[in-house]
Length: 396
Ligand SMILES: C[S@@+](CC[C@H](N)C(=O)[O-])C[C@H]1O[C@@H](n2cnc3c(N)ncnc32)[C@H](O)[C@@H]1O
Image (tube, rainbow, N blue to C red; front, side, top):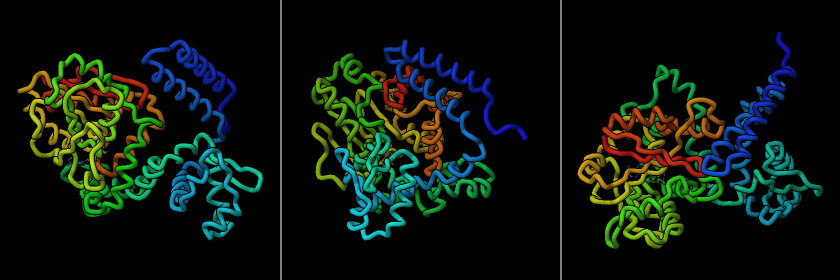
């Protein structure tokens, strides 16, 4: 049997690759910074993996879900906020406020200390680490709860589902794995279960790494070129949730004139008293003809990745005829554009996590193929610091 560890020569080569990527990162100061950082992360991760003893990694790998469960327990107990401002949470206080058994708290928290989400402190007690800090944001905690409750069960049944369906990708006709498990699609299920929809809606605010700022597409500069007048529709954000992204564009680009319309299923708007300032809501099912004619921009963010090519084509065809009549209108699709090779763990995770609802993340070739089927092509792929790119399309 081969030695379990990578050889010193192999490690040396990986260190060299890290150094090359680090130099490229240091030399980059413009819009390529994030790409260079990502390449450095990929090389550093390969180095880290080479230092691990392969046999000992089998158990932690299959049981990564333990971390998800431990995070969900802490959310359920409402304990994240107790770590605000670097506060230490003493074990005895957790036990007295929650009534939990000490042994359970120790075992759950120990899992997150090992994952570097919390750290042990004398007391005994716990403190949040930089990796745990995102959970202080209730939107991140809501996102984790949403995934834990709605998505993970279908991931766990992925091998069984694929084998019984001969390893075919879910399609509009077959329905999604979520539907196989729950009898209906996620979006209609959430429509009739508002208490479960809340975690999804709040969670959608957390997908950006720390900030909602959408900087891949320079809205202010590009829309200034369109000479938008008051009273015209500047942007229609199709399936835009409760308008958090458009509110952010309004905040960061106050100079953009015209209306911002956020369309989504009526149930999405029911939980909020009013739209954010400067935003109008419009209940709309995107599988029906687009009612807003003459908008300068039609924007879809985190929508294409929710659906198969067949479904994306169905809702794109509700818009493409309009775009043909309105050559000045822009179509912007904001989602990941995966690299062809060396896809990072974060990107892979985001891709496969779309499987339960029948969606997928696409690389550039997959985007081209989907768009061409709909008589569209890529005009430009815009990138900023967020993981999502903005695919600007034009009619063929
Ligand atoms: C992943 S969320 C993205 C929300 C928002 N665009 C964002 O970037 O955070 C998907 C959204 O699609 C909406 N949606 C699902 N099916 C829809 C349909 N048939 N018509 C309109 N919106 C729909 C959901 O209600 C949800 O708000």
